[in-house]
Image: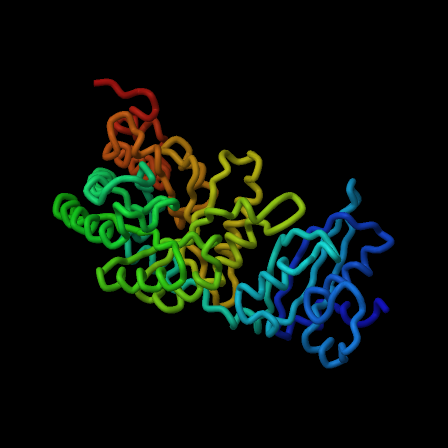
Amino acid sequence: MFFDLPFDNEENIQSGDFVIATYLVSGISEEDALARAGRFAIGQTVGTWVELPGITRAMVEGYQARVLSLELIPAEPVCAVLRVAFPAHNLPSFAMLQTALVGNDVSTALCVKLLDVSLTQTALKRFGGPIQSVTGVRGLTGVPDRPLVLNMIKPCIGYSAEEGAKLFFESAMGGVDLIKDDEVLAEVPILSVAQRVRAYAREADRVREARGTAPVYIPNITGRPKYMRETARMLVEEGAKMAMVNFVTTGLDSLAELTQEFGEKLAFLAHYAGAGMMSSTWLGYANPVLLGTLARLAGADMVMTMYPGAPGSRGYLEFLKTVQKQKLPLGQIKPIFTMVGGGVTPLNLSAVIRELGSDVVLGVGGAIQGHPMGARNGAIATMAAVNAAHAGVPLEKAAKDCPPLAAVLGGYSK
């Protein structure tokens, strides 16, 4: 019957403890859509794609998911938007949440892509969210208002601690706020995290003596859970302030445990590496879910988010929706400090600031290390461009007083 569970009205679940998933469904027809949606809700919770003996009314009422809506989209192939509410007590971890929402054998019921995840107010209380958030990260960097600038050390991997320290020093002397490891560098034979932390701390002291301030270093501690916990503990002992985790590959639960245990002393940057393999047109996760809602619930203070290019380019709408999920009010859960990377340069960062405002971290890699006058001047050019954009000053005008920025614009001459 279509007048009983697994079907329900949204009004009936709002005061309860539910996680609500919104899916794009493909490969259905109008004739069987509602029945297959019901089988999907059953199959992802108490039952499977065929009727089973032993399922009681108590099981259904307490643990079965509920179809809230199903709207067909007139297209070829026929597709639909489906909303399903899952009892939150079924989902004691991110691993089980992902298993229930997209990880079971959904091919036997529906072909789905997870477009959105929302939670009732009761379900939201199960999550801590970011501890440092925007305010904490700004406090650690000492920058109260303007956009922050982060540089990724390039080359990415293969250098010694001494060589890395030189790269760190040059970018730092250019005035950037944050310097991080590349996502492909964690623990390698010639360069451990501990070596980097100690070597870069010495360089930061030199920069602080010369400039008065120094950037915060963000080491990549991605690895097995035990290694990440031990490394995070070492960072705290060494006086480090931040850490990075490639959370798609380590798992949301590993990130959540780190943020809960060390989040008062370390701000955590969650890197999106691997997110592309989690999504396709009809299957997997939409980026706003993975890089927005789920990373935020797991406690990431910052999330590296790929910049798709100029407004109107392919993927730009999903980029903006991802940022919305990182920042819009979400009960007691604090916002994420969005970090934008991937092709950000002094020439286009003003567009990012116009779209996202000042609470953004601009990840600039090759545009600093690859500057024709060297990394230090690449950092100087980037900082000049950020300050100009933040103050509403045209880039060309700012370049008149900044030869490194003029060089980027093509107007530098000796």
